[in-house]
Amino acid sequence: MSYVPKIDEGACSAHGDCVDIAPGVFALGETAEVIGEGPDKKILKAAEACPALAITVLDSETGETVYP
Image (cartoon, rainbow, N blue to C red; front, side, top):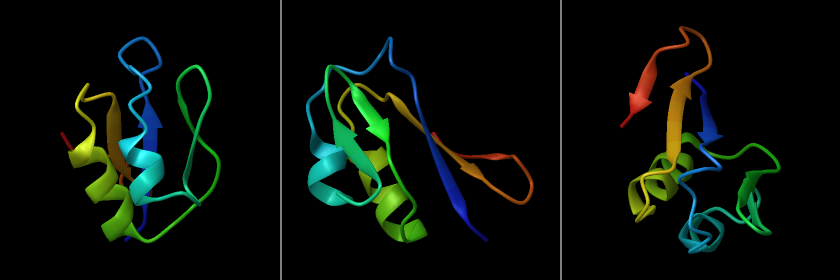
């Protein structure tokens, strides 16, 4: 299984928690953005840490939402 993070730019408040947890996956500008891939565990942890709930995590094989 492989996770794919998606960011809702309208919901993102640019707190940067995702970048702190998974810097190879996320970068921060005016909002967070996905810049690469990383371990599923870190992607999920970053999404769970987002105070704005702006990160959705999808299963790349099934397309199903893993989080939230």
